Every structure is written in structure tokens, then in C-alpha cells.
Length: 457
Image (cartoon, rainbow, N blue to C red; front, side, top):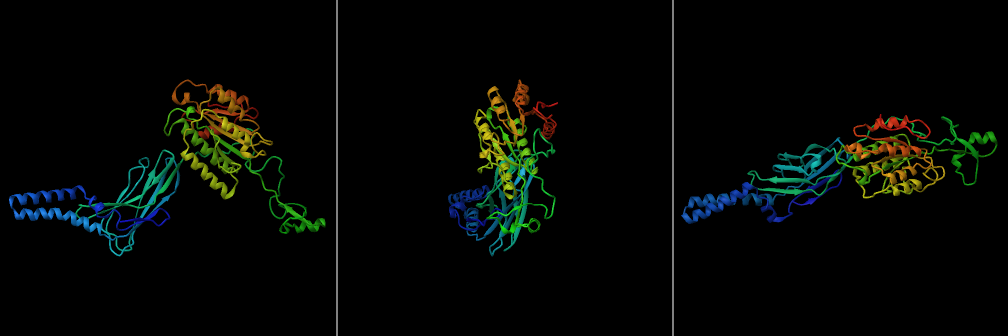
């Protein structure tokens, strides 16, 4: 057999030849080796004792496994296989379906085939299927489901095919060459459409002009300027004013929002699906999805200063590019782990720079964006750095996960929250067991002004 693969939804084909006769001999099962050993032993005893009948029995036992090896080695079956994974991106705790299809592309029927797909142990037991005789040109389809409570990227494959003889003396295993990847993203919660302190709506700014609802009046005409596209000429206004007028169509601007995730290893204690860090990752994912649905231009930022999407501005733009950027951010959260950093300085610099654009950024002129941050443990120094991030943001909301609350140790979270509120943050503690949707609603109910309200209770 040899491996070769048509691409697509995870495919491949196997044929004859890889490994040679030596590889086929290595495929002898325990039963086959026992037959061979018993035959050799019987032949030796027959030679010593001079028993011709016993010699014939020994030769039969020894030759039968070798005949099966030769038969499988000369098998000319060509089998193609494909894998289809739906969906390829699932939230933690949800199932994905894997469909396998085998097709006999040779002119001879196959024997008994055993099909097995390689699956990481976190996705469940390794699936195996037994396929009976497949006629020439025939196909068989089987499926199984995978599920993981841990986010990450998991390879599926390569697909393995096992051929056996009718006596079970020889078993040959060949692998296809392709595999697929299942991306398990963090769990997300549906969030209520609340208005955070100082927040603007997703589209537009307070100073933009109002546009008419529909029809030809959904334009603001102005005088023709050299270089204007003639297709934008507004003939009704031209006839009314006696000069050439063109449409000046104003497009609503997308308000910007940054979701900051503190990934410092020193800021969290514990591990597993119910740890504080996993809660923060899930909260960041829920915020990103909600803000994109509300029409914001969003970016994901970590304490290392890394911004996703990673283009010049760091923010999603809209349309198909926005959908691709959203997928990129969720893929990033699927594999994000603890960083080695000890401080938030790089994140502060990235927030202050606003992704390279002063207008609409943070810290630049007209810094009117929204900042949502998920912090781990904060000492005095990092609390001051976080407080400075508030800057000129239209709104800043912080969810602080204190290890003392999550592990039962001493907690200083209220002191940290008080300092953040003094600088204009809407700061809330995130204790274990609380749903992020509830904290989100509480952040929306915080009074206007300093955002001094917060906490749980």
C-alpha cells in the first residue's frame, strides 16, 4: 500500500507497495506468530522422531501464515478515503461531527477492512469501524462525534486502514496522509444590550449629521468639484439650484472598542475549566461577540501588547473582513495561555497609542473608544498602570479576578477596585460561580459620572 491524497475535506488513498515484504512479515498477529512457531516446533520434532505425519502438520502450520503474508502483500486494492468535520470551530462543551467515507477505486472487491481515526484523548476514545466486503466502485460512510471541555486546537487524523486475512494471522496497517483540525473556542454568553457609562452606540458619533430615512433624499448634495464622479450627479438638485450638484453620501463611522485580556501567569492561580483564567477568557470572548453584533470596530489586546487583528489599525473594519477578524480573534482565544510578563506596561502603551490612529483611539485627540478589561491579581504598581489606561476613553469597564476569592486565600480586591473607580473606571469584582452576563448587566446599571459603583451583591 502507498499513501497519496486528494485534497478537500480531508482525503487520501492507499494502494500497494509501501514497506515491502519485510513490512508485511512484521504484520503477523499473535495468532500468526503462534502458528509459525508451532509449525517450526512440530517440524523439528518430526525430524528428530522420524514421524512423517507430524512433519506434514508442522509444514502446514508454518506455511499458512506465510501464504497469508504473501496474499496481503500482493493485494492490489486501491481505497480512497475522506473526512468531513462539521463544524470546524465549536465552543467548549459542544460536539462536532466527523464523517468518514471510504471508496474502493480498484477493480477488485476488498476483504474485511478495519478503519480507525486518530483522535486526541481529550476528544474521547479513538473511534474504530469494521467494514465488510466493499464491491468495486462501492463506498461506505461512517461517522462519530467528538467533544472537549478544554479549548484548544486538536488534530484529527491521519486515518488508518487495517487489512486482515480471513484467518486473522496477518494484519497490515496503512495511514492516509491528510488530517483536519478542530478548534475549540471558549464558551460565550449572550449579553444584554446595556449602555455602559459614557458609551456611544456602535455606529456613528455624536457630531455626525442626521441622514434621511430613504429615497433620493438620502443624500446631502453639494456643488460639483473637479474630479468628482459624474455618476454621483444629483439631477434633481442640479435643476433646483441651476448648477451641477453631486451627492455627498456620509457613511456612519464605527465606534471603536478594545477588549483587554490579562494573561500574566503571576496574576492567576489554579487551572482547569473552572479556573479564574478560563473565566476571564470566556468573558473576553463573550464581550467580543457582543460588541461585534452591536456594530463596533473591535480589537483584542493582551498584556504583552499583542493586538488581534494584527493589521495597521488593529481594529476590525466591517463586512467580510470583520467576520474573518472575528474568527481570528476567537481562534486566538482558543489557544491563548499564560504569558511570562509581570506587568501591564506593554498593554498600557498599546491602549495609549490606539492602534496607530489618533482620532478615535485612546490617548489621542478625540479618544472616544470603549475599553473593557479583564484583570487578574493586581499589586499596587499594576493597579496604577491599569488606572492610567482610563485616559480619555468614552467608557472603561474592568472585571478583576482576585485569586484570593477563587482559592479561598486573603483578598485585596476591594482596595484595587476603589483605586480604579477613582480614576473613572466602572470596576467590578468577579468572584467564582458568578455568570458573566450578570456582571455585564450590573456594569450597565452603574451610575453615570465616575463609575464608582460596582462589585458583586
